[in-house]
Image 1: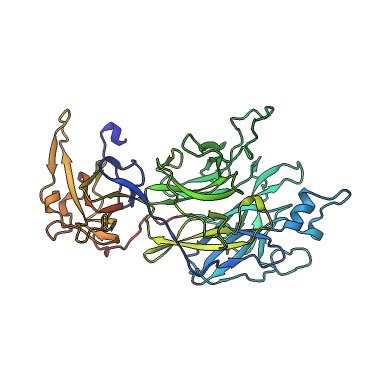
Image 2: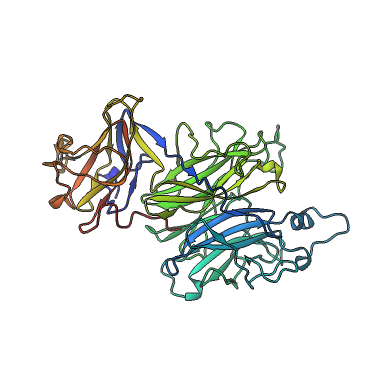
Length: 512
């Protein structure tokens, strides 16, 4: 049942994002605004400094609840090995033991998320280096390896899963392979490898949806709109740069990948969708898209997209930039590729990204590293009013807890000193009898005029009405949330159960 059949949205205590219209019924004189993350001024927290590392790109940072340590898995590319394999001189031949794998999956750990150690492991050698921080190199390569904790894993040796691209030694095809681990350091390839035949290039991102217990794997497409025999005039480069999704309930059987995002009429030609990261937070899947300008040294900017189900995606109408490249001379002046889910640290999110000094056209001759972008927890895109009254009405929802919290931000409105800045929330209600389509105003004591105005900036501010925050007997009933704003905006809301402190509890933290 959905709102279209007359039922309210049963949101429980899951944080509801206002990034798109999934939970929004109507709005008046409000605009969506991106909360742009700030770079950590300390610069890159990890650099390419090993013989097997020409370029590095973080694929996943996990906080393991068992040891409280941060674990980073990143891809390293060695230019010399790559050339031996894919662009050999006449008469030369690549040998793994002699030349090393061109793509390897490396590991680093940290106690604070800022200071990282590349341990010397006995897991995977590279050329004559017996001890490395490599945890996977595949038959020929371990490319675009993503790692996830397996929820409810019953086999200790399969507590973590890794999916990566490699070449099937029997057929020579690029396929998807899988490995398992108990500790995230020692990995065992799956005896059923390859698990999927056929694989493209680009970013491969694994996300678990706790609401459906389904895995989503975001990859490049297998079937394209272009006729492979036709010559495009003018040539437009890599034709596979669009995002698809393949799903699985057991990590064994995967659906055929279906395209969910591709460059449309609003994307400035020749911008193309090069890389992405996808994560689940609260009510939504979020995609941070690396949009590449192939006519400008393949530099890029980051856009944002959202989806309530992981299949139907919404991009913002004005295509605002979520994160800009660094200034000229910075390690991330050419490219920024956000990878993995945000790591929650108190009231902040840390997003790890790969940065390079120049665009992708410079290939291996490009310095860079891993940086950290920081933004307030849960703040992606908010709905903001200026120096006039703005309103937003949510879909009808079932009140899922004794308290209501909002993630909100106030600003100074055109720089006018003393300008009003506030958010107020009313709980509107409707008639529920069949064929009774009347608006019945507000639940008693919870009108807009009863609401205590909220000013300032808060990631989890409890809403109250004439000093009372407890929703009491309204729990389980239905309501529309009506937000009244002035020089302020709201990013999300959630209901909170009795006994939780303000700002505490499960906020729909990214799961993978």
